[in-house]
Length: 486
Ligand code: B12
Image (cartoon, rainbow, N blue to C red):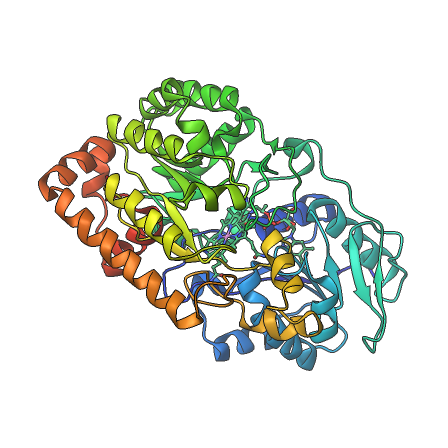
């Protein structure tokens, strides 16, 4: 076989909001496939276009493809199950390959319960190229058992095969690539900011995180691997020239993990793109002890550092292995406020061990520090996390019916499993509402609307006049970006 048509599908997520985040993983693979195999894939971005089921079906029927690549986060499991069936009904010969967070931790469950043929377990750069190259050279019925990082099934799903592990990429700059931005409907993403204001694009620069939080899924190990600052600036230069971006939202697990790189980033930004604004992720135990760094970031265009505070109870923080203290969280709030930065902290309710007292401590923390609890997620046992193992061990999730569990999995704003011994399900759901209401009411007393406008103007300058925020943007801002929370 010499020519091969590849269709890449980005399933929809968070349909109650606008599409704001580009599908980095799939778009990186699209670029790699183009570069290494000279195959020009078709990119079906259902999420960006918010296509209806009927539209998706029509597009698939009218597209030539031999291989389909599909992936995403855990909540797209049900979409993949459904879509894979449809794809096979249109083209029974096509190979369907899945990857990403939805498939990596439960490849066997996905293979047994869907029409997916092969799962890529790990980073896709090397694995997917080797797999497609094999198909291209030897056809679809060739052996793939020597390609690392795969899990696949025989035709009748009775047997699942695993190949050896694919080692982590060591040099992200050389072995990965930029996302194929040109294959994405970039105007959709650029006009729906993730966090910032203006033409805002998200970026991921690091894989792996040194921490071991019990609610987090970390397939990339605990030794962070980063793109070089030079690589990041190449990307910014391209995005500025081609898409005229104003803002970058760094969505890494922990952008501040390497302070030297952050400093280098700030210096280069000031030198080359002094108008560029940006936001990033942080951590209370880092921000609290690095005021100088925050000062530099602020004076280098950083307008927001979002931290996972998770809980106002030290006991809960310890039990989730968060490695941060309440004092560090309070200091973080102080530092952010000192520099006019908003405090978009997110919290979790319902971790194992949560009770009325720990919930009260979270509310007290928010009241003491005048923080609204707009982002309060339910502890959700996503596969691959320590709390998933806990839920299995304690019988909260049925080991024998993980497919059913995956079909239900959604956003952590929706209640899924009760991991506490203290609350009944309804009580937990009501507790969340109550906590959010009390903290919000208290916050409303604290904020001065006129001051917010001045602070926003200080941060965003003229960009504020460039875009109109509608209801959905404001709602999103409160829940995630929280730019108006000072
Ligand atoms: C950006 C992001 C988002 C964006 C969405 C991004 C998008 N468009 O898909 C938003 C903000 C919407 C989001 C939401 C949520 N997120 Co999120 N998010 C991330 C984040 C920070 C980056 C993801 C990313 O782009 N990574 C970089 C790319 C390069 O990696 P990648 O996608 O894995 O791709 C590589 C491989 O997986 C593989 N690959 C990927 N797909 C495919 C497909 C094929 C066919 C092949 C061969 C290979 C392959 O190749 C790629 C290159 O190596 C990660 C954490 C992180 N740092 O990774 C969390 C993360 C993915 N999110 C997570 C969670 C829990 C959520 C939420 C469920 C949380 C919530 N509060 O509700 C929601 C889900 C919303 C919903 N309804 O679906 C978890 C994943 C859990 C899971 N099993 O899905 C993560 C890992 C965070 C964590 N550490 O726990 N998220």
